[in-house]
Image (cartoon, rainbow, N blue to C red):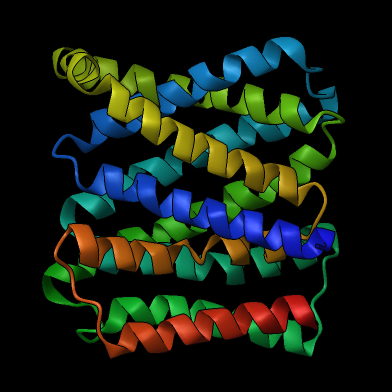
Length: 282
């Protein structure tokens, strides 16, 4: 098996992991506590890694700080979107717009220029993903605000993806970068959650710590692999593969949340697969 094919298969696995933890947060009644507990679990899981691997180089620390900031924005808008909208609406918009934004940012910031067919692949993939949110027409009425929150989430997804892609390449220790990022990014959310929902949060930990730890393994493990992958491959290719998580999310929503999975989702799946093929085989 070639390195490129192996990397693609690994990223598809992380896409399923990403969809699973989003299902975990969306399906919980206390979404803030669920997300914060999961993030705290990620910090705990990576703390031993930080002890045994080299710390990231000084040049990468500003990127870690910026990544933490953009991640906080991502979580704020994601929670707002999930509070008011369905997984099948929010998830495709948020994840579908990200590859296009990363492609533009990667070209400007890292010189990762795409050829015509690769650009067409990204457009086809993003269009296929975003179309999943349009099964009931253009978002309006009660779906309007969740759609706007999802668009804002997409901007922050692109922001932290570009930040971590550039930062890990300057770190001289990808595992060190990943470990310190996960240990530090939980602090702002933990402070807010404890301040706003102290009793509810600790009660949540007492009742559901096993589930939170499982979600942490899915979330931090999946994104940790993605950060490492961006140190050896282009950011657009990794983000595009990772955003196939939307297909898993649509399937999970149908299986576990009673959401529909009709012919439009089949067409969207074909577009996502075709876009990835154009991007990676050309």
